[in-house]
Length: 272
Length: 326
Image 1 (tube, rainbow over the protein chains, first blue to last red):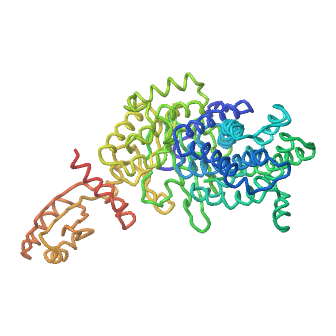
Image 2 (cartoon, rainbow over the protein chains, first blue to last red):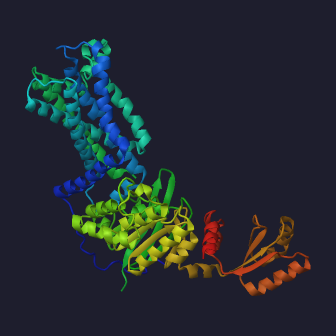
């Protein structure tokens, strides 16, 4: 049988192709719905997402907190913005691990063979992280209140701080989307994430003042995104000049998005 | 006039120094089934990945119903359904949720997607399991779900990449029946398989692929006829007798064996005539056969004669399992 023995399709059928921002958003919402369902079906994910940050609040409030001196005196007020940032930072691993798992199980191939928006799998995944973060952070605020966390600047300032936090979490989800696509299996994605996140969250102002660290570490700690976001939230929630800190935190989050969204989408198109 | 649902010309794909496809042409007329048959690593999956827009070819072109897969991948995607080697369904969703998600991502609309999901669950005998998470499904159920997900948007062209690999014989036969029914409805199908029996049963035409090249093509009957042969099998009680018998039968055809069960297999041109001569020769040498059979060549024999090696080690086992199930 030769390829030229039969005529090609005489008439190319008109094939409807769905495109546009509404399609991207619609597809992303479908994928996000799927990922949020996972959270309810896989108890491990739910435990990781909720119980662990609560444990951190209790650990630092009642075990380590007494030994840490902070400006302003109240450690629980100092601590909570730090735990918020740590929580969304570690939560972003879910995007990387989830994508790596989908890749290794062939689900990404299935998505890529569908006439759906190209960026929707990543957008849906990071959107699901965002929705989960809204829930987890709400829970953390309540737990914080229960152990003595008090907001001195009013509800609007708190909401502003949380918005800044959620944007940062969303940006990190895109960073880990790229990590997940590059590593392509869940264990490696997890293994790659921790060495990135440990210094970012612990060598920051999240749990202790940067000034208490040795000089060489201060240089890193004072100039990295977790510190920027935590300082901005603290200023908003607890009072103090917030303007330039908020701008710095915004710049970090938007900068990460500008760099990592295109990189992750490009990698998604190529992978396979 | 029949037009081509799948048309590929000169497909080349290399991964570094490894050439996965080395100039492959495929033409599948609408409503027919092409079996792409070959061992692991022959390039079957690479060909499917190019045709389903997952991979760009280094050279050559491919069209689905006249739509170029490289130039218009999104349009091509709306014409195809793909079920891969590893049942790509979401384990944490229910069967029904998997189907609804696929429907919505095919832009069917939510209510239409739900209706289609129920239709497919019913058709594939998954209605009762539709509300359970896929985690609890058997291998056969997963494959059926995977196949139904590929069919959500009623694609005119379907790709099945080793749809029954790893299934037990019973699930395999079940899936074959489902696929036969689909093809009966006019779906064009490209099926890759390592199982000769599967290609024989499901495919109108077969392309045998090895090391990135199509080394033979035709219907199962044509491939067997090309071999121009009957297979004579003579079994013996022990290795020593079989060893002596090798010398007796060797002149009459192409010999393989003796195998573990002291069986010699001879591909010959004139079966009945040669059989008599073989028996005379064995009798004269005082070698009594324990078993004797004359059969039409299988696709495994075809592959053996084309490449000098069996298609894959498990092929006989599968065929045997199916024979005993039948």
